[in-house]
Length: 320
Length: 209
Image (cartoon, rainbow over all chains, first blue to last red; front, side):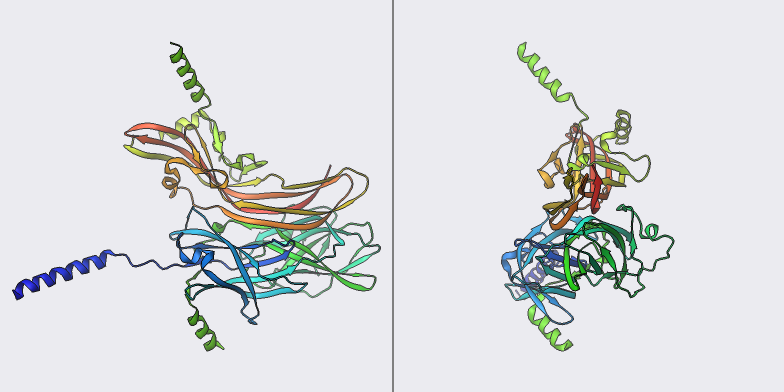
């Protein structure tokens, strides 16, 4: 009898072991994301922006906007934050092949409040999404520069062409701008500021142009014979005079201030002097370069797992 | 007899245009140029090339696809259609708020010829009968990304000029031929092509009228 019971026990145990070996462990959800520069001017009320990433699964609790209870974009440096609404999460049916298959996901997002003329300038922004189950997905999204539409529009653009090159990735290397204005007198442009911490305009090498450039021109061809240094910061101020009814074209080369992000789409602030008064005008963000997600290799992506919110809070307290 | 003639006529209609191609919108781009000589689009394949490539797929299959890749991820440069044009054929400069907002796609596009087919609409188009899965290891995979563009810029247009938003780009083209079998019988045969847009460059350009 005991022998039979032992046999039965061994049999049941063996079956259980085999079953446990056959059952695959539940796959953990994660996303791949590459930090980028978000630089945008809100030019209409229903304007949203998109955050794209790759998800390890197509069907997931974390990829349903219904389960997101709170979303913020936070400045890691200062802990300033703005709350966001996720309008929609678009998951692509066609997976992409990296080390395994991933599903491209696009979060359609808008800020959940209206601002006046305040400019958000988060150099190290983190996207935090809190889900119904108290878990949080925290993603280092890159930089986040955001500006509400500015009502004045006296500056006119006649041409706007970016040159590009592969530096630490494919990026805008400079900008050709032909400008005019409709103010009753002369203006003096003193500064053109990019809506980004990644690069700035190099005033020393800014060059007046008499012919247009092409999108595939290189910076070195335009500034020839200068041996241009992309990272050397050169102080200086612009002094571009534009009379009434005059148009003027310049090439503005960029100096790179950080190498972790690429410049693809950004807004420009033109600071000018008119009748002794300093004024500012913004040119809306323009998609100078757009790249397919698969233009990047697998190693360029960072991996993010959703974790309990309490773990993040504990880590933040420990860090502080 | 009439019925037989009618059936033959219908069959003739279906067989005419055997090599005509069906593709996503990349064939409507203003210009597509291969970076390296010798590469070509599916629509430029000659009959001899088709025969040569079909000849590379020897034997039959009980069920499923047999494929041959003639070009694998050949780099191309293209000029996409001009997105936006404002003309000024008057005597004085005009200043205008210019806007474009659209669901743009950076994507993988498909083309077929012969009796191969595409399924789906718009940006969701893909090959019929699982050819995509069969080619997955031969053509680098990518996907459709929907991006909502919204740009608002004040432009000035000089007399006798036009301002246009041009889109240039770079991509990769893979193409080849395929046959589909059921019970060793060939039921589909033709060319396939995958066009992947990797990068797009936007510029606001002034041109003389």
